[in-house]
Length: 129
Image 1 (cartoon, rainbow, N blue to C red):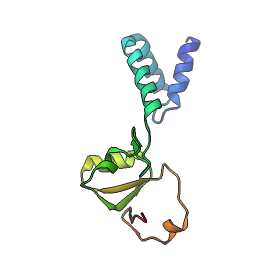
Image 2: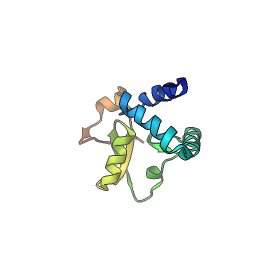
Image 3: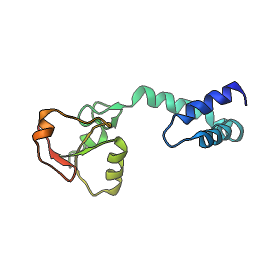
Image 4: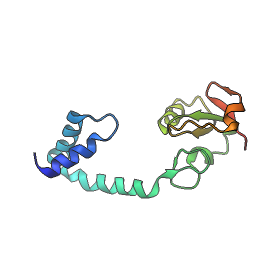
């Protein structure tokens, strides 16, 4: 194995859900079977790294100050669903069952006095804003 391939595999292994064998398969696939896809992948990663940020309102992913969910006028932003990760928000959005706002914790447990004193029911809390 070359040092460059080994370095690529080590970086891929750091991604969630990719162990040693999966990282090896992805690296070999990109380098040997689909090398023409590498420039597009590198460009997409660089573009996402420079443009994607957290929404100022809810913490979702956005390229503008507010994400697409927070920009929707037909949502009830008076109801807030608190989720741990963006992937939880994506799952709820995919289901189409929820039409309120969100607050993404990003795995951080919030301990301020507002959270301790508000009524939280089924993952929803009333927004103090």
